[in-house]
Image (cartoon, rainbow, N blue to C red; front, side):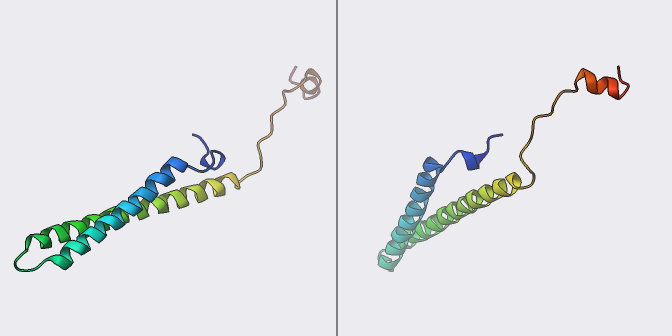
Length: 104
């Protein structure tokens, strides 16, 4: 498993997340705009307003959850790396050590 703290900033994922926030906000704005123009004569705008507002809310919630996952995930890797000391290479037993212990 690769260590994400050593890979640098995930620019593609951050760009996609920014686009999701922008898209959700824009969709919510269009829903609000349709709702504000709705009336009894143009009742279809209510339908588009509800779709826009709910769709924008869902996209914003999903983007927020992904942002939280990114932040929590990077923190978990940092905590995991701080748990122990750096690994050291194990030395092989020499002939002298084996004879001293009576293993040869």
